[in-house]
Image (cartoon, rainbow, N blue to C red):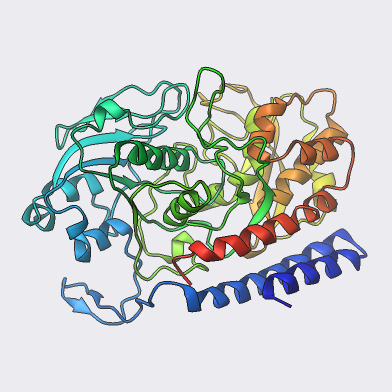
Length: 466
């Protein structure tokens, strides 16, 4: 029996033998984590060479053996892979998250770093994804901009939805570089931009480099519904089918991969002929959370101020397509939710009764101030705050499913959901419909496990890290 079969069998056994919701979640989670760790260890024999013994810079800038500080793809590119862009005219897709371990922008490093200058690198064009080059725009139709430091024009790739780098702006480009921070959740438009860049590179026969960065919520955990293939759309918008840039490929809601691994997955599964090179990180391991990397946390969007928001984002992101506030316009977006009609005290009691692992729920009121989604602006509304008590036990997809179930029981007449948008984020109309019909949310999510296990098995082929 393979490790994957063992994990699935263990999970099924645990689920079949359960006597209480809290017991099931604790057993299933622990078994899942143990098998995931075994899975990760198994991958190591087929992964890239172990670079732990490589020298790294010490405080004085001199090489120092044994330094385990994570270095992102941009640093590795300049350290030992500069030949990939030597003498080339480079277009860079990036934003405020594109920085090295010292907080220096990838834009500046490619434009003026001595290593790039000696190699004859010519940074000639900039592209930005949703939220713009500085990551502060919380709207659609983000306009083009100018990078004041380099004087380069920044071409926006976020109009009504994410778009690809236009072919007209790639005609004089030798290589297309992508340096963007993913957050570990399927519903992330930066991943869509990266995929569209791969397709643009294929069309124009331009090499594409993806500079890798950590999965901030760790790369050892996978969870949630795999996006229905009837919903997934890897293509750019057409006159007959509008693309959104975030429901691009059938992965679990929490996919457990890095941006570079996702690029390899897309190339393999979509059979892209793009000349793709992933420049890997140094010293990153799958079990790492972002705050264990020593890298500077740069808000990947205006509404993800910290790691807690990033971890709970997959739980609440489906409710972007509802009349429920997810805390935009507050200091802790995606760590709270609410609505003017919410019976928060009753909802908290119901959610607490579910004994969801790793979190607690608290009744509170909050006031969204100029929220990007426009929900309840300036109103003090009843809400629920989600407190993380043990991040290693948090299962965001189960939390989201449980919140939908509780809302459908308590505020069914007031809750309004855009089915299409909700399903694109949660991943499956069947999941939403089952929960809305009153099915146990834990049982509904248990039924997603075989697809998640199958995804993990396939993902082993493209893992870059242990």
